[in-house]
Structure formats: C-alpha cells, structure tokens
Length: 179
Ligand SMILES: [Zn+2]
Image 1 (tube, helix red, strand yellow):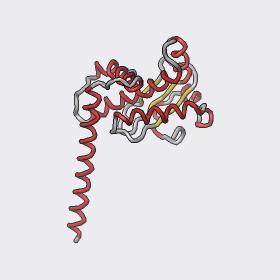
Image 2 (cartoon, helix red, strand yellow):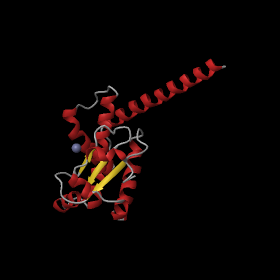
Image 3 (cartoon, helix red, strand yellow):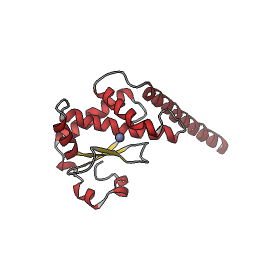
Image 4 (spheres, protein in one colour):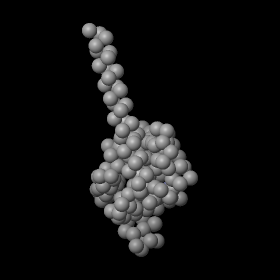
C-alpha cells in the first residue's frame, strides 16, 4: 500500500518525497506494530476495515499526520525519527507504545472528520485534539474508551449499513423494473 496509494501524491512536499520510505526500507517491527495496532483499534472501532500509512524518516515538527479528506479509508503519515526522538524524551513510554499511540491518535482524527461529514457533532473541532489523544491512550492502555468514541462508531456503522440497504433496495427495484 505504501507506494501504490495515489492519495499520497496530492500533498507531498519535495522534502517529504525524499524522505518517504519504501516498504523494503522499513524495519519489520514497524510493519508488525502497525498491524497489531490496527487489530486492537478494530476491537473497539468497527467502522474501519482498512487504513494506509506512508512512513517517513527524518525531521518534522510532529510525529504523525492524518491526511484530511481520507476519512473513509484513512491515510496517515508517520514520521519515524520524530517518534523515536519523542520516545527518547519520554522515559515512561517505549518506542513501540509511542508508535502505536501515534497511529491511534491519527485514526482518531479520521473518525472525528468522518462523523462531521455525516452531520454528527459529537466532537467539535476545538475539542478534537484532546479527544483523540485521550482515545489513543485508552486504546493503548486498555482503559475504558471515551463514551463519544463508542457512540460515534455505532452511529457511523448504522449510517453505513443503511446506505448499503438503500443501495440493495435500489438494485432490487431496478432489476424488477427490467422484468
Ligand atoms: Zn492530533
């Protein structure tokens, strides 16, 4: 997914392009941790069946970034050196924890955007940063999730299921009309 995700191209600076790691340049543990993180996330948040990442080396101002507009199948950027640097500063958190929390955090942003696009206002943009960090930590440390996160997920799943139902009904009507 790393290189084939066309959505990446739209917002990459020249510097970022140079720092984008190819799949074979990424240490295996990061791929493994990413899969583990997504499995854990999916235990709680059902709306997502896939997400993709672009992993970069070198210096940025932050550890991760959610690519706005990709809320259906989130695309997130992970800045490895910043994640490493951050975990050196914080002796309570391991590199693995920091990496996974970054993933949860960015997926949280996707979830917030998704609910807004669907007309829900469970979390305002102002409260989003606090909320996604809280969500990320509860998932990582196995503590109870913020109630808004569960509600958001349930409502989004309902909306998506209903859309599917509408589509099926429409198809059925069309096929009946043909007969
Ligand atoms: Zn954030």
